[in-house]
Length: 493
Image 1: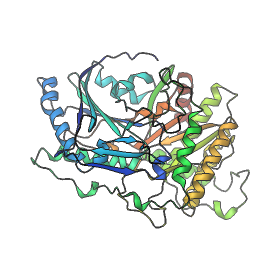
Image 2: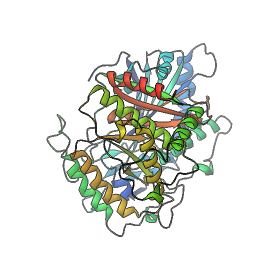
Image 3: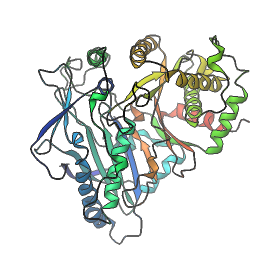
Image 4: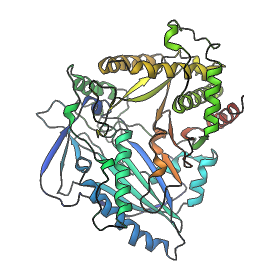
């Protein structure tokens, strides 16, 4: 792996335990939603904050004011999110793993790294304006999430100082315990607690962020938990063993995260913006062509009736995935088969629905029912948008067990046919640019883990005006063509 241009100095590596620790042992079982992501790579996010006012000695302010407040508020917040301070383990008498936690002990608490970078903070922020920065650079600000065959951490954190300018909070979360909604809930709770500590010596958790942990609300009458548990040992065989792994990637009861290596060699990380006006124009384009662009396998007309409205999420995903596919095909003509995958939140779709504040995983992967060559067609954007809109409507009436088994079969078939699967992570409804720890809102937010597969991120834009920020990592040549296609397509009437 290439080395970053910037150096990182580690000042401290500690573990932060929940305040008021006791020696009580407790555990949480994992649902089939959790187990479907058991050995998947972590979701890694970075939040960049400038210092809110001129400082005579930024380094002293950071170490004497910022770090202590972040630690204290983290400890306070963990009182309400105790499982985050534990580990995944696999008891000998259990068919599936669990999250086990105590509130005392050397191995308990959340891993926190305090670091310092000599990178130019303004340069890091400006990377979002044009695709020119090597993908490796952002890796320095992302904390490592420890895992082995016998255990795995739930979450890890890193706070990095940039000399004279600001700091970054990096968060890595294990996908088998936190989906996007849960991860953002915790981050907002921590930020709220930290911000409130300015006004109160004993801040309380905002009821908006109160988590619901009871796994009994997830019913599993058909044994999907074992279905996923057994499936991971087969998936692991597709990954080459790491040097120190003793060829044990496919150990039946392993908890080690599979080696989804970051794509950093000859790759570029960049962000692009779809303004509210861009999104409205894209919606109009799809709706204006809804009845004239015919889909090859469009046999049930009623399912594809022209809607009155399209969501920004649908048109953004369709536009970006098609632009990626055309850019890849433009550089390598042999690559002409593509699919688009996304995650579905089942909290409101289960029967009966579970609490909206359910904390854990309640998402499954799905894919849009497109033909593999639709993405590189002239009207690929309209075709994919229509199919994606229709797929989301159909999911409202589908049974979760059917979704699970159909999707596993579908993804296996796509992979065997040499189809490039383009994924998406994040949501423009998470409000990530509103997360304020007490020093103002972030000036840049990235979902850094898009470099681990062919995935792009979608989050709200920092202006909060209905736009969307898109983040991705691509080969340098593919990124250049993607940038051209992305901007040119927005000029079409």
